[in-house]
Image 1: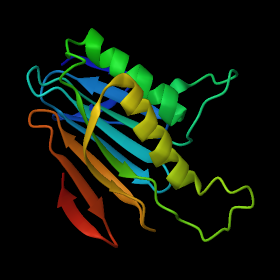
Image 2: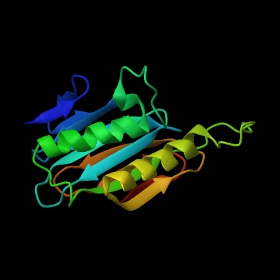
Image 3: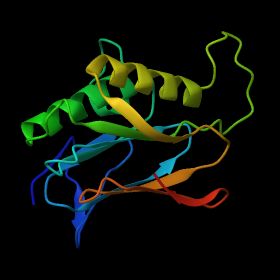
Length: 170
């Protein structure tokens, strides 16, 4: 199994666990999983021809110059994931994206007019993917509920589980 990650992934019987502020790339048809997505954004990337897939779990929208972990941020996390997928054999022209998360978990009114962290995570993810030339083919974002994700690296199907909103497949 060829897996790339910012940390040591937990692989158990064909499953690779992606932690918070982490990402992983797979080229062997395993299932990439992450849980605890509230305002965080989950980004699933997939090249249907090579089967190379990747999953990122980013906490915050944009990094700054002092960022030591690029996977913590939507912008640098997506860029790093995209690069690692290319290194694993994905063709950048065929990679497609699915997004999930970005919930508004708490009812705070923003005083700076920038929106909630969840909204900003979604916006940054979409802008970064657009800059990379990656089409977003499906999304399950927003709301006020948490999500867990399972990316089937063999098919590109993204299963989303939520106690409040039920299960769905993108």
